[in-house]
Length: 272
Length: 272
Image (cartoon, rainbow over all chains, first blue to last red):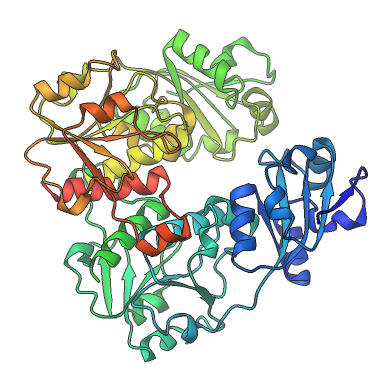
């Protein structure tokens, strides 16, 4: 039984969850305050609901009711139905993928629980770009990384753009967030993980020659600044992606962080 | 001697090269007609000029004259100096990186010349996203792919966004464009290249187990559709990136094309 609720006024307070989806500051405080996140598009919404996130509401144009009928019939929450221009007026941009869902966040497990049975872990320091975080989750999920651990200031995997770019992979890989940037690598170390820092530094060991051992945590920093010196110091081993000599001579001395993460995950998982 | 030319009118015909930089259709015809392309930001402009592309003109706010003084002193072309709002009115968006250059394209070599001494080649079929093409060039350059060959309909590496996302790597890797989609893989074959098609197909050989031989051309298709059936049929060998069984069970069954290209270039070059 679908709770269809027609809405015509973009200022309708029942649509507040969907306000100005591209206004990062507004969204951060709104989502934190209500413990919600937004999923966009049929595939991602199905994944989000399928992984047990309670639905607060959905918002879509009428033409999406049919394709989503099977899903909506199991949802005990209002489905707001509005014309495209009303959705656009609320969200602040034309929502090409048509359907939006507002979902309740689930409590994140502690770091030690998320890595308890893991052997290959990715640790993201201060990545600020939501798209990059989403893309890295997609790599981690597809290639078989067991878990992701986020530094306290790493961008939110459940931010709309992260979820979208990940194609829903943020629901497929267990993850946790550190509470203490300075000390929480110790949780991984205590669990028997070797700490590997990915860096362009020429003195680091090429990825293919690294001995990742039984349990390995690979740390990635942001594209511009890389890993902090504190985390570099904490690492057991520095590893690098082998770059072409010609490229280095030409000044093409780095990869974007998603490309680097993809290669790193591939080699990390292959070493199992 | 810098030819500074102050401009105040966004409709000034001397700024026509910089018109509406985000209007893809307009830019395609304008750039083809005049054989020009646009570079944006200091680093990319330096690379473009450094690789011998003749300068038609530059356009920048006054504050960029000093940081670029050494470069400008060697340029025999007008440097249009305008306020930010004038630049924005011409370009159609706020140009954060400040400086723009309009450069003359150089004739592309034929495919057979570009691959003459190459051993590891990337072949891009119908990738339509300029950002993806730029990011793939960045991977190819950094990891040491010798050359890139483009299908007739692949997006333009010298389109502004490609150049920008590549961080100028489009100037660091030799490339050529096929004239005949149906037959030009034959040029590679005649040069002794094995043709490898990257596909998610589970029956393909895992990349790490592929024998790339002495000369290998790796073919990549677009993210959505993959390679055409004609190119798949032409391939000597299908190769795939090993995906996690758990991911496949969860429906996370693919990587984005840049992540896939990064891994593929890494394994291709390592196999030398």
